[in-house]
Image (tube, rainbow, N blue to C red; front, side):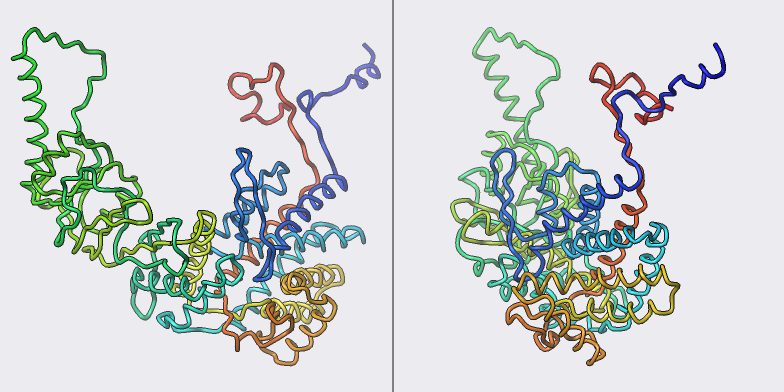
Length: 549
């Protein structure tokens, strides 16, 4: 074969069926996907944002304004859109709020970068400009932040109410924010020098449809959505001594099939007597340890229930593992696998254990626990969808209050800090080189997209809102003037007590910038084709399932 003939032999790098999109086309696809997901979220930003109805594949309906829930429930296929969803989830886990802002900002950064690409600016220059601008934005944020007293419950309540302002439960935010603030401060641990740490695992949230949101309450203890197992047991015990069992009060069945031959009534009676003796022994061990309440993660046999009832012991079965962990922390009890090992040292304490009726169900309330840093917020509401949305709102508010208690700096809400940062970034950009200056200016425009989205959702004129916001933020020199969505005008929002945690703003800027820069640097998309036969070859083929080279 000649050299020319050899050079014409095709070299296959990717598996058959794989596709590759390169350069401008790849970047355009990614930018379009990011812009679309941002548009979905943009219309729900702020107190006047619209709600979304999400219908699952099984017909389940969720109506929500919560960004994390919207992104989690949408069945997204495009990998770039999935990246933005993951970024929003990480912000939700870290800061608890700002999920919508981070997607809107990332989408706006990517959209503005597209304009620079069309003008011939290289992606590397844009990415460098964005990263440097984000560092400056964080510095400017710290300068305009307000330090507060992290024990000021009245101010913390303002933070909680601001977080709830954009939710379906906003009309009941006064009541719910009070519960959130009380719960957060009860579980706060002082680390010294007025520094605090809040473990939100100590705040249990239970929900039950029925009544109204005003009927929601804070319980000083743990609520278990189970009832007492036997009608003969007491329904209320003061000075409770609690045993926690993570094994069943039942006779274990053999792992293999067993056959028992009984030839006379006496043998049958002996069998029953032995079974009774075993359960009596279990209950005697519990009683000897001093317990008058048994909380079991697994089942309790009917015979064991009778013996427990005779001893005047309250028993609850099939409690969730997560609740058992909370109960151990709250009551000081140690979880025991075998009743033979139960001793007085394993017993926990609470002032009161009582079964109460909640709507049509019976729940067990454990109050006045040994560890006072264990509380439960019991949410009530007119329907299941209302209590579900209230639960999501309370989660965000708890996280916002925690952020401020642990890092006591806040900024005025309503897009006020974004307006000031945008102006400062434009001033700073004049010191940069021509192309990086363009990137910094586009970053400033993207930051300004947050207040403009709030104005748009409030039905305001974008041009008028933008010009007035720039004028007032420049004239005041402080981050006070933002979008008053309820009155549809630019106003001093510090007078309206609208504040947000600085932690959330920092997290939004950092996460949105990182996500946008990662997406903008992609210039080649390789989609692997399905292997022949429809299943991966043994060992995954290639390197961990990557295309073979």
